Image (cartoon, rainbow, N blue to C red; front, side, top):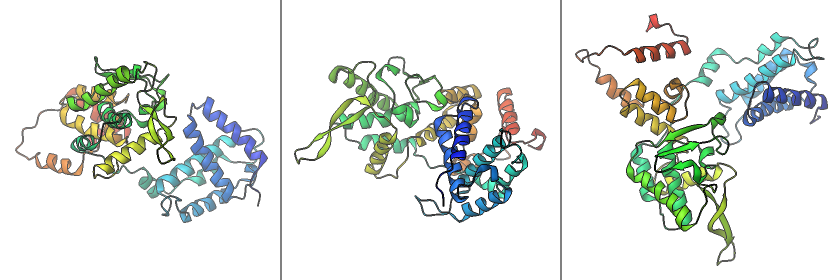
Length: 369
């Protein structure tokens, strides 16, 4: 069975260029599309795309249903199947309009990559994501040693993550110059910092406690006054390896450059949480922790909008729909507190607009609410 098709490779290269330049997709998104196409080609015996027929799409869907995930050994999730089929459908719709393929392919044939409606609902279902409480984060910080430079860095990393809500890619790429301890903010400059969608914005420190801010302040002071770091040096430098007394390689200090990926950030989180006797929570989960805090302390729509912008969300709906699910125990508290004898204040104009926007996004008529 062939493992390569030159004609397919050529047209895929054109499609990736189209996604990159015309649709402005990032490399991670294009890699996911490439993986989906490769999966289909392998299942289809690397046949020329010009010979595509709807039955190939149907057969591929059946094959996905029988496959298991390499990491877990369990059947592929509906979300994985849905994203794979959606990428293939988009590709064949594009392909049907290309020279040399117009007479061979039908736009309608691409629809055979659609997943059943019930499976789409499963794939898109919003589920409660685990995230640590603020007290658990405090506990982790209190358990972390902070004698060596590496220990100080690791502790400051987690403190900075809850102080700013920065994503792991940003944490790995911040420079010392981006942090303003006097002004209490960090400038997430996309020219240097790996922010989501290359957005540039400022984040003011979230009100998570002076002790947390002090850990970060002490770290920045240590970098400047003890290690003599310059402003363009990394905020969280990579670990330097050297020969230990036993003759093997071991961490011996900090390098002058930063990490090339966010994997070390996740490794530090895993070690810190498990060292504190807690399950592992990834760096992104602390953003959920901050959203939950915001739901408690923000008393007006304007305040929550500011909280949302501080997380880098242009639309407050992103914060509500992607992060802002009410935890079950809090849901119970709120429902029990809404008795028929409770005083009902009329909804503010801002809240009504927000409710209307949420309803529109989910295709719900306000008359039905």
